[in-house]
Image (cartoon, rainbow, N blue to C red):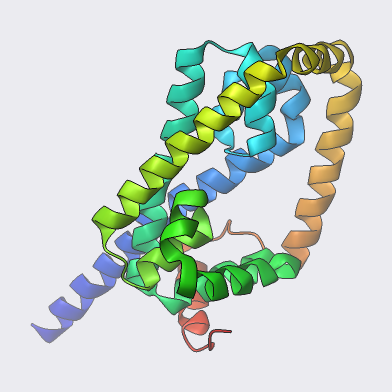
Length: 231
């Protein structure tokens, strides 16, 4: 009976890890695709950049190229679909989730430390301003109430996307000219952006900073991260 309980707990643990690892990996891959071939995507299918990345600059570039409904629907939906995932990752694994993410950032790990220090004083403001991976994980790890967290994420995202929309509308002519330039030379620009991202990913892979791994590796790294102190 005890062995059965242990086996059930182990299966539940692996299932939960898988439910976090698969979407986190998919989001990472999508973001790298957006970085690598954004000139081609901007020209051929600009709406895909809103699906693959919530980068503000790319949102601004896309704004003049897609219908208003598509822009608002995709730009708002992406962060708000992912925010609960990141929140519950932090809620489930606490400090271990933060330290794991810090490892994967490598040279940019200081961003986590800075966010943690600011989060202690400005948690609500940070969630509204930037409901992305580490802020959402911190919200979960610090047991912020989910209703408050998600309400702030919704309001902040809607306000941000609205500002980007009107800014893009104001800059429509130069943004359209830039998109035309990129479209004209996309087959020259895309290989360059692809090569830059490929080199960066190769370097991160050598330093074990990629979140693409097996469930066993994910579990082991979280266990190791749980023993690391915060900043």
